[in-house]
Image 1 (tube, rainbow, N blue to C red):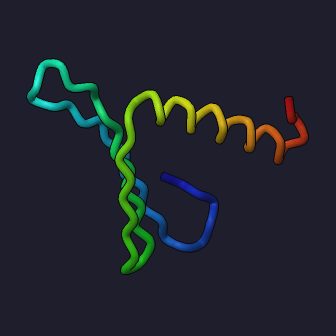
Image 2 (cartoon, rainbow, N blue to C red; image 1 turned 90 degrees about the horizontal axis):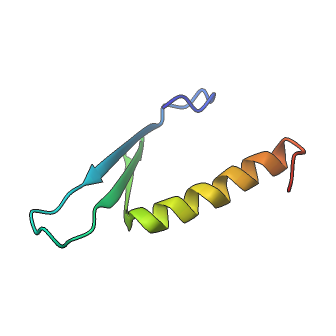
Length: 66
């Protein structure tokens, strides 16, 4: 992922499917910057809500706040 920063940042996004037929899919986000790694797992619904919030924040930084 290109962050337009000089620092090296690696972000891995994966959709996790369970072998159990009734389990909901999950989203895995892993961020690595140098020796530091952070990992977050969330439901698809939580990821959708996060995407709405991030989209709104990005719009606000461009002066397009809703």
